[in-house]
Figure (cartoon, rainbow, N blue to C red):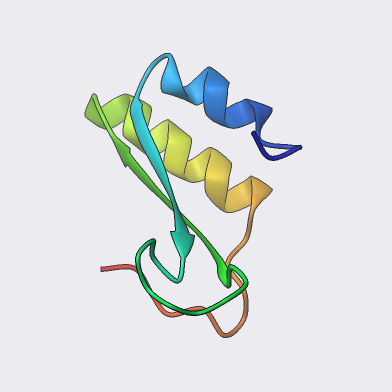
Length: 67
């Protein structure tokens, strides 16, 4: 487990959470360029998780918008 990601374990108890290292696994690319967190579950819980993640980890200035 990467240091500083204890929040991920806490959120996983309420939601389905998947962390993806970018570039995505299976692609050549060397060092990770960042992380993408995919969250699913009850709409209220997902919204709270998204708000928390946005405050805790604001997107980089050059980050592409999520679909």
